Image 1 (tube, rainbow, N blue to C red):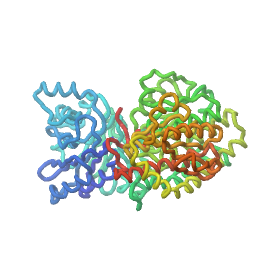
Image 2 (tube, protein in one colour):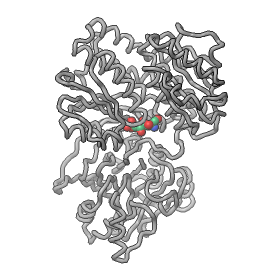
Image 3 (tube, rainbow, N blue to C red):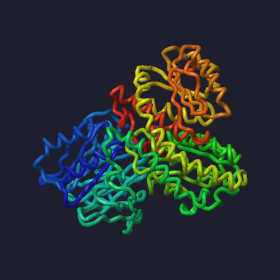
Image 4 (tube, rainbow, N blue to C red):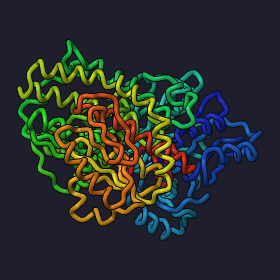
Length: 607
Ligand code: M6R
């Protein structure tokens, strides 16, 4: 959460920063601001609202100012409301900084500063951090940063400018991500590669508590002992076009359409001679041996991918699997030992709770495997083994392609695990793999359902409450459909196991509460249809999502979405697209901001 960027070099810093912030806006969009060196010292321009508002302000307030060094921030508010004063950058004495993260002990630090007669102007923890660094500063910036960060408890990614050290930016992080690159145009640093990709296709990840000193000539990186070293350079495998809308009205729609390619890129390199194969990921079958249980932990959509993963692993490999919300797992003294395989799933690889859950399980001796989209991210670096999804950058806050590729990797894990533990034969494994390699073309087919779903969404947009019901894989998928709808349409919805509704919740069903029923699984199909009848007889309007072999008599539902013929275990890939379309078109119908829903940010790097 919060997008941060710093630039020093030969280009116009104001434009470089504002352009960079535009690409980072999905990380937070409550307010935005930049600070930059001018002949007369550091100038700051900040405002509540989006980067477009900031751009306009910069144009009117700093049009003629020449600057080649500055820092910028787009905020997702944590401490202190959404106001100009609470916007970043913050200045205290000689220090101007931007911050991504949370300083947990800021109240104590604030009291100490106030006792010295130093009063902050904002309510933020970030201004307190600036004050602490300034308090420690007596001419040596690195010493001040080192000393100040020993006093800060919590997560931070800082870019810092000192008034008396022009054309220089210092950066340090703990918990929050920072990636940087030196190019022929100077040095650039940001919380996310998307801000770097128009400048370079190489970057390095600033390690925790290491300090980067950036000038137009170079980036000097020092470890915690003050020793200079050359960080490992990574290559960005996608180009600048991948982080743009490419003709679509919204990133979400673009990303929905990118799913077939993302699935192929993720699945095909791991299909060798028709078998699931992780050798190019440097993962041998050893990780699947000597384990008694699997724990999957993640947040949001990634956790929902875990629910489907559990179903597949238990069904095929017959190993007990639990799925834990990462923010719960980490505080429950979980039962984990060296016979546990802990799988974390994360698009960003920076979700604070997921990262903490992973570290906890690792400390208890678990083997750790992560399913991650962003290369070199914290979760990937902390894990013993990584299976990267190849979705490319996902910009819309609502996860779409990242979710379906996570599903595909969970299927690959289930197949390999089941095969290695001799629960399924080579022939069966190959047959499952054939179906998996075909899902991309099934998803392509279902992408053409847009206008049918748009029509249904127009009716749903008027609802105040919506239920999603299903059993088994369909219930797991309902959880994702419901989250997607809530997230971008602001309609309250709940996902319920279809058979559980009658144990209380059915009292909420009326003729103004639509029910979206998923019935794609033959083993429980007739049960779900009975549940559909139960809600219909209470007046609910029913949208039934089913497959071609199970299409029903029109009287049973108000709308029927018939999926292309797909082997039942693989319908989640196609149903997911239908549910993504539904959420998207409801949001569009309501005139909402599809890509940047209120109160949210893409990457949740705070607890
Ligand atoms: O980056 P992660 O996959 O770890 O993010 C986890 C959740 O924050 C994320 O999936 C969130 O639920 C999505 N915005 C839902 O669309």
